[in-house]
Image (cartoon, rainbow, N blue to C red):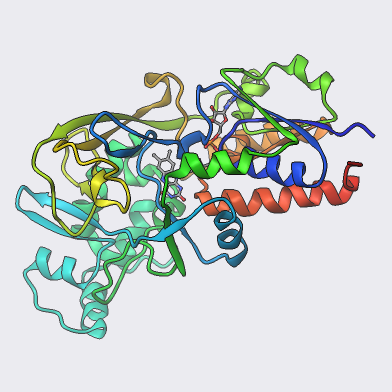
Amino acid sequence: MSKRVLVVGAGFAGAVYARTLADAGYVVQVIDQRDHIAGNAYDFVDENGVRRHKYGPHLFHTSNERVFDWVRKFGEWVPYEHRVRARLREELFVPLPINIETVNSVFNKDLQSEEAMQSFLKGVSEPISAPSNAAEFLYANIGLELTNLFFRPYTKKMWSMDLEQMSADVVKRIPLRFDAEDRYFPNDKYQILPRDGYTSIFENILNHVNINVDLRVRFDSSMEDEYDHVFNSMPIDEYFECQFGELPYRSIKFHHSSQSARAHQAWATTNYTDHGPLTRGTHWHLLPHHLVKDTGKYTYTEEEPCDYRENSMERYYPVKTADGRFDSIYQLYKARAVENTKITFIGRCGTYQYLDMHQVINQSLMGAEAWIAGRGPAEI
Ligand SMILES: Cc1cc2nc3c(=O)[nH]c(=O)nc-3n(C[C@H](O)[C@H](O)[C@H](O)COP(=O)(O)OP(=O)(O)OC[C@H]3O[C@@H](n4cnc5c(N)ncnc54)[C@H](O)[C@@H]3O)c2cc1C
């Protein structure tokens, strides 16, 4: 039995597959078109001595014990509970997701209990029993004013769509708190960050005698002949030369500035709810172990969403519309993909889903193990 496997993409999907297959005795070649490993989780220390995540802040959170145990094999992780504030006016920052303090600030109220908060929201929300899009879902849960303040302009700049055009699924993921909880991921048992950065975790995942990594290498279908199987995290529509049409993504342009005053606020990320083009800003030095060297300069990064074609085809968020038209196109690609038993599409762009890191890790561990179980472990 041949035991050579190609993994396209050195992000979490590719790295988890590569490591699991390597541990089972397969010889794994990993390629990535970028000049670095770690995919969108890549981080590095910038000219100000600040650890910066190149593709936007990546906060690790999970309740999955197996994922938690797995990532801790590859480096030290430290606790970090993420908090976000929305900037309403220059001087007014309120908790996000919306909690009792947010409502008290916006409506100048003094609600003191979860019951009072629930009853207030019931009073402002609309009686829509089966919301058919994101706007209706929000109106049914938080009413018109909070929707228009926190979600309408933000959604427009983030997705270039009105709430009415978007699937309710996109906003269903956003939690709503009836108490004063202001952590962004309060329901996840583990909220952690890698002490020495994500890139060092990836170096350790990929550091295996059976794994070889080549960067700046773009997948070409002729490579398939050289391997027993290909696990591919490239965009599935690109693989099939967009024969059923493009699967669109939103992307983000990152704008960095150096600040000479060090921010001391209790939250690292600020969301901008206004009509301007930017959606959020991050003070990296407020994340643990991100001020690697204090140079007196502190990087602040702001995000400007755009179409992926305006940002060198950098695909970040799959576009989910209320009518599900892009999901239907994805299903056509998926059906074609199963015809080729030598290739498995994996990860965010291979399966056209928005996935957090812990979800990609979980899916990839299970996917790699199922594949090995079907084949039997390679002879070492
Ligand atoms: C702005 C932003 C913020 C995020 N924040 C969070 C967060 O806070 N918490 C969280 O859990 N998750 C977050 N995520 C999601 C996280 O980035 C993904 O879960 C994770 O990156 C998915 O891993 P992946 O391997 O599927 O994809 P990727 O990390 O994108 O890796 C895919 C790799 O494949 C390579 N590739 C693609 N095509 C080819 C080709 N033809 N040839 C060779 N190589 C190719 C790419 O260069 C890339 O390196 C965020 C994502 C974005 C975009």
